Length: 256
Image (cartoon, rainbow, N blue to C red):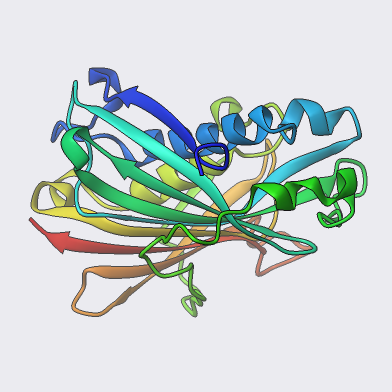
C-alpha cells in the first residue's frame, strides 16, 4: 500500500493564507496538483518522462471537500493514490490531514494523458505497456462524491477579465489553478468572513490563452450558499457570439 500511495508534508506558510488566517484554496489546489506530479514521477509516469514521448497529463475534473482549511504555520500532509485507470481517463484521489490524525478533507480528480501535438487523449491501457495499472489502489476509500454535472443557463456575465501574463503557465495556456482563483474572486471579502468553502468543483472543458477575454456566469442554488459558475472565452466576437465554454465550477459554502 505504501508503494501505491504518495505521502507529502507541508506547512501553511503565512504568505499562503488569506485574511482569516486559513490556506487559500488556490494554494491547496497547487499542492494537490504538485502531489499528483510527485506521485506520477516517482513511478515513471511524470510529465518529464511523458514529454520525451510527446505526451503530457491534463486535469479534467477536480472536487475538493473540506471541513476546514489548515491555519497559518500549521503542518499538514497530502496523501494521493490512483483509484481507477480507464482507457482514456484515470481517477486520482487525495486525503488532506493534520497532526494526530486530524482530517481536513478529501479530493477527487480525473486526468487524461494527451498527445502534445494533436491534443487528443492517449490510450492509458496500452501506453508503456499499461504499467500504470500496477499502481491502482481501489481498496482505499475516498468518502466524498465524485464531481457532478454542472449546467449554467444565465446569459448575463457577472465579471469579465482579460488574460494577462501571470495567468499563463509553461504550457502556454491559462493555468488550471488560475481559474479557481478567479472564481473565488467573484465573492466579496465579507462573504468569507461569515462562511467557509465546504466543497469546490471544477470541470475543465477547453483551453484559453493570452489575449482571450473570460466571462463569468453565475447562478445561485439552495438557500444562497451554493453556486454554479460557467466561464466562457471571447463572448461577443463575430466568429462565436456566445463564446466558448472553458470550464464550469460549483461552490458550496457553509456558515461559520
